[in-house]
Image (cartoon, rainbow, N blue to C red; front, side, top):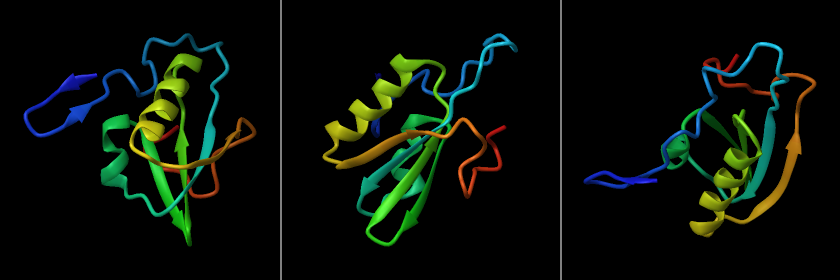
Length: 101
C-alpha cells in the first residue's frame, strides 16, 4: 500500500503479467451489501463493479490467494459488508469488464 497525496492506493493488485501461460486463471465474484462505484474500487486495479439493487458484484482475477485476501481485507477495512466470494472459473462473470481477458 502506498500513500499518494490524495488517497491510499494498493499496488500490485492487478493480474500478474509474468504469470506462466499454463497456470490456471482464477476469477472471483465478490458480492457485497450496498452500491459501490467503479471509482471506489479503483485502487484495487482490475476489478469491475456491477450494482444490482441493494448489492454490488465485484469481479476480479487476482494473481494468487494473497492478492484475493488483500482485496477482501481492503473492502472489510472500509466497512463494506461481504456477502459471498465465489470462484467463477467456468467463464467470465455475467457482465464482465471488457478489459479483462
